[in-house]
Length: 233
Image (cartoon, rainbow, N blue to C red; front, side, top):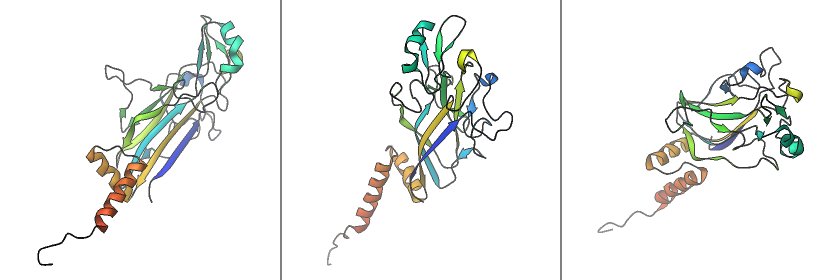
C-alpha cells in the first residue's frame, strides 16, 4: 500500500440503537472518544499504527455554536446564524446558545495535544473555530499547522466534549441527528512510504505527500545517475 487520505465522520446520535449508544445530558463536560467512546457510530478497537505505518493528522472539526447576548438577539438572526443543530436555547441569565458548545482534542497514546500556556490540557479546538460541516455562516478553516504525527506503533484518539445540555427546542435535552458531529482527516503512509516519512522526520522536513514524492524522485535520480569515471577507464 502507499499513502492515502482518510476521513472519519462521527455523529453522536448514531449507533446500534441500544440504550446508552447515543448522547445524553449527563455526557456534558465529558471527553468522549469518537472512535471507541460507546456513543454514536464507533469502530471496534482504538485507532493505531502498526510497525509499517505513519499517520499525519491534518484537520479536525466539530459542530459549530453561536453565542448571543440576549434572547432577542438570538430571535432576530436565528435562522441565519444557527449552526447545524438549528436550535435556540436560553439559559437562566438570558444568554442564548445555539449548538453544543463543542470542543475537539487529539490524544497520542496518553498525551493530549492542545494545552493551555501552563501546559495543562484543555478541551481542544472549539467548533466555532473549526466547524463541521462548513456552511455559509460557519466556514473558517482550521487545518492543523504544524500537523500532528502518529509514529509507528502509537495509538491515537480524537475526543469530543460538549457543554450545552439543552439541544432541543424550548430547552429540551434531545440529541438529534447532526447536532453533535466531529470530523478528522489524516493521511496514512504505509510500507515504503512510511519509511520515507520517518526519514523526512529525521531530516526535519515536513511530512506531506509532496515531500514524500520529492524524496522518491531524489532516490530514483540518484539510482539512475551515471557512475563517475575512474582513472584508466
